[in-house]
Length: 341
Image (cartoon, rainbow, N blue to C red; front, top):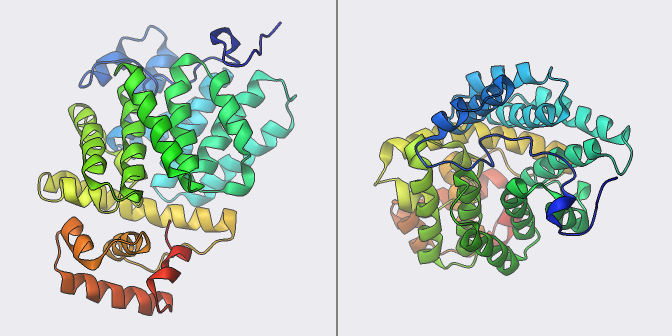
């Protein structure tokens, strides 16, 4: 009989479906961590996750696709999330919608108290948050389900919930929750710590506390570098506008270019999926630099500060703003909020 008591460690409703994402390993030893797994399926899944985080999307796509044939439901859901991440990053929007619909249909066939239904929820909550699809979310279910997750998934659950809070405008609570998780996590799960650090950085950016935004971004970057992880930064590229340029553009120009190149496709795909799911009009008319300028301007950042963050002149910022207004058919910065996230 299942024990569903709130917050109890024995209340885990399902096994952690991930290997590397929530794994405890030493930065720089991610590959060895995956290769040491005794189960061939676990090794394969771990290598798929590793390929994704390093930006080897074709390899990750192939491995995750093969794992979708697994009868073990935890492995299936992990592969579902991984494949969907690859589809979003590579603008395979038709395939992503197919996976999304399949998960929804599967969830509707399962009993409410089913472990399998809870795993479907993990997939759907994660992607609804990434895609800013608020209509599919209920705040209590997101927070309560985080407590029912296996302990190894709790940090990523807190990341997802903090991401949700930022989208809802509750920035202070998001910072407190994610920062607290980082303090008490003991630096055991590098990938979870990277995602939490990025969400704290985004929160401080929205508060215009730039020194802390840079601190947490660089903390995430230093954790990611030893294993060559880039996709967490690509996934958050739009929300990190400004701090990413400030921290990487001149210090790590090659890495900055790689992230920017990946981000162009990722953003275009994200906009397509987000707009279709939500009925909103986040713009796909802007270039990458224009979108960064528009995002910062929409947050109340001055032209001088934008120029400093992006490493361009104030005159270039003004020129970009003129182009943005012309492309979007608007007359003021206040109107930018309807076109950027």
